[in-house]
Image (cartoon, rainbow, N blue to C red; front, side, top):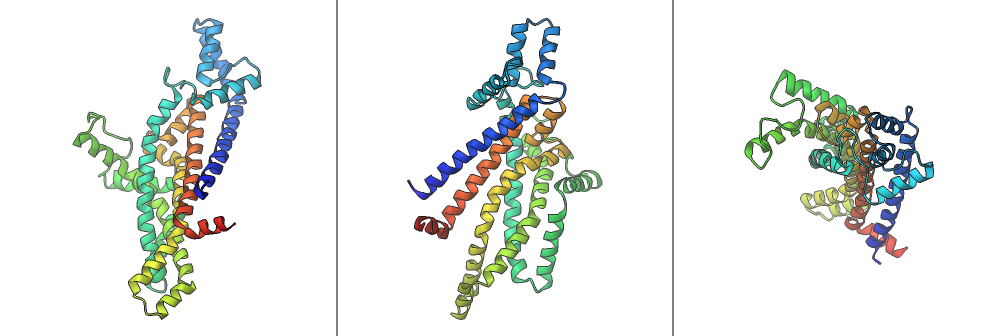
Length: 335
């Protein structure tokens, strides 16, 4: 078995265990919420004229387990459904499986997060290199200060500032929503243009909030590489400045690729505040709505999907770093 295959197998096994742990915690949270939402739903169905057995089955469909069974029976029913990708049915969307609701919401989170993160990563690493090389000049100071300022501002504050500036003071962008309802959904210029226009502020928020971290991390990494012996040796041999610059950038950027994959996973959870401010129908907005509506099946599903996204990001980060850095492969193969 190759090194990457071994690492992948180990990560998948640990990821599976972590998802089961999160699912278990979610299960016991639902079971211990004051007011017993399962019993309340059961009583409401009975009051509506449903037979007791039918009401029990309906609650089982909603929550994934029988409300009057033993705790162990409820837990095994819930985990069994999870292993078959059955997360129950949404209470606020009667008849709609939770997995379908999550799948529909995921695209509204993944695309803006991916666009904003990649944009901030590209700009941050380029300016981070210049901030390191010009660190004794005014340009280096200005770039470092801009990174520090943006890195210290919370995401939700940036989001509100962008709304105030570009939706109120200079009303050129919509303040909320994902698309204008006047356009018919489909592959047409009006609908696509509206999607892009509504996505600009969320994407800009993701990009600006991450930019500071990237430029500071890249600057620090470049400064470290500048002190390495191979850079000094290249300069002493009279190697062209452009070639030395490529050596510096290539070696300094390696640790940031791991951070890139991790940041994508973490932003899935961080999208809660941004999507709430922009009323953007992604996973974060869905999670808040499910808590407010006491839709516990949907809440469990959102938690699990965000957890799974973070775990996958960790796996990708580790495998990617193994592929791009030959020193890691050589070290593990030698061991």
